Amino acid sequence: MLRNVIVVTDDEDSVKQAMREILRAKHKGHEFALDLTRINDKDRKKEIMKQLTRF
Image 1: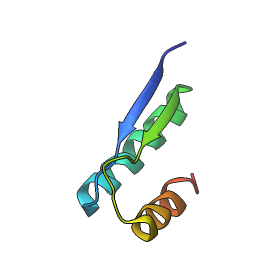
Image 2 (image 1 turned 45 degrees about the vertical axis):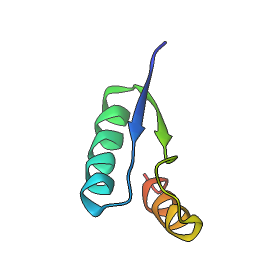
Image 3 (image 1 turned 45 degrees about the horizontal axis):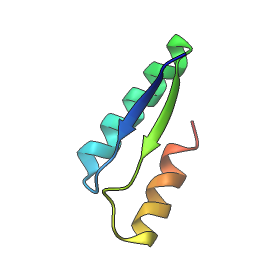
């Protein structure tokens, strides 16, 4: 089974788009993976992970 990779950058638009894609993937029953490698600040990365993993 294929897994959707959702790329997240440091801006708020990217985080909002990732939330939409996560909800869409869960609704359709698809697996997904988050790619946070483009975020350099560890604290910011942790904050974004908390936002995105609550779904």
